[in-house]
Image 1 (tube, rainbow, N blue to C red):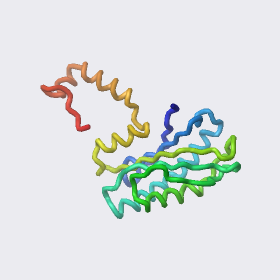
Image 2: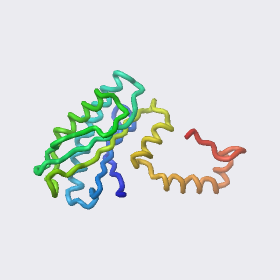
Image 3: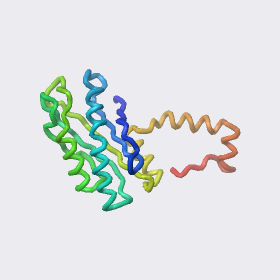
Image 4: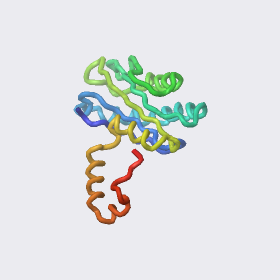
Length: 170
């Protein structure tokens, strides 16, 4: 399995809007950086969809997974929602953003790309935000486990853990 790529989304408005991209051989494609730049440029429009959703429900959070099929010229030929924990309104808004994107011409017409998106705010329960990020590879679980082990070995950290050992809200 290849790693997910994070597209930086400036923290305007709600914190924690994350957009990730994955595709079986994505990291082997020469146009990868250009494709990520297209998605990065679209991040404010996706964030706008989320801000609209937050006006309806200030506690809204979740994830969407879109599958986009690219035409020979790099235009988006088709967009499907393969998973969504958001509203249909949100699904339609983000799909409208994706369908208008223009990517570099892919190596093959009909290339299919999978786009998981995670939406959270400061109102999202931390354990839920963490679970969503883990699910889509935005948190390196192995690195997190190593850091927890190191913290457990540090005498100062052990004092902070309390008598019964490590306490964690997750």
